[in-house]
Length: 439
Ligand code: AMP
Image (cartoon, rainbow, N blue to C red; front, side, top):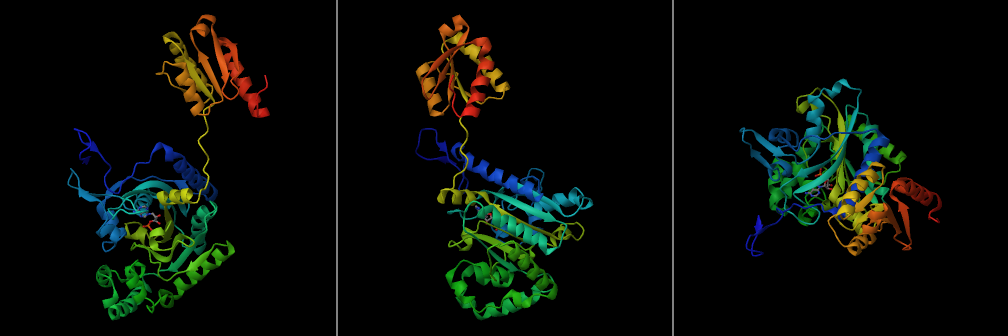
């Protein structure tokens, strides 16, 4: 919407809860993407990107109609073709749709995929909570072995731990369709007894989706839950054995985990293992860096054959916020190797084609072709921390030469235009070799 009172024509401002990712921040995004790609390669995950728009029913059917994500936060609307569609609030449902649609069950199982994509939730914007945010997620589809859960928990843990962040995994089992209903019944009975102490939302949740009361952030609700039954005591033998094995693998991998009976995750499709990642000393649901779980029923629920699966997603803005608040160095964008400066119309023309030649040779080259003043151009080169400027002015045009300026020492050398490529190759090669150029 245009902002009021700025100029005669009102300037536009971002929609609430949306953020620009500005050029200055791109190095953080590149850094996270590079780390994600490194982990994906090391652990055998291939990238998948599904559309931002999907049928709204994909999410109501998978995430669940009584979850906050779907009932309150989903951007859903009817399009020009009268179809009810939604901006995806999470990544797993689309990946599973794609797995089914493209017959990935015919590939060697499990199929391991990752995504790096924007998500949309019409949540109340606040610190660490946006309406468009990005997640990277890893999914392992087609294997029920607890070692797969452990591998993904380990990957999500190691991703942050290797950045030097003190990370803790809070882990729980949410059971399966055999044992969870018994637990939900016991929990619902307990919640009836403490109803008066619950917040308004939880008084609704306790009938619609009692599990969600467990991860309510309200202090009163948490206090009322102190004596609540724990799901761990209600797990069937299969879920119990599965969970114990996951924990044993995590011990082997030296993952710093903490059993937390309140981790139920916000989505209906989870079964068995569920986990969230926190920076130690900064718990509170809002600060979760990521979370995941097993979703053995989802593929079938969305029309595929019964296929076990497990996955996790991490918030990229929150990861970047931690990089910044912990002063974690990300690789700075390398300065261009060369700067091409020109003086006069003819020189500018000559520089345009020289620029293309240098790029073609693989050099990184900066320029300000629209600037006329040499002083301004060299200032720009200094600002960019370029090592060498190549200058063509009127004299160089007449002599068919190029002036090479070492931006650090200020030394200048005149080089025959035809020899410029050999000269630069030698200069930059000897620089790599010696750390400094002598001749
Ligand atoms: P979830 O699947 O809801 O647990 O989300 C996984 C991760 O995505 C969270 O741990 C956050 O890091 C991130 N996330 C979820 N919702 C938001 C949001 N509204 N704004 C920013 N990041 C979010």
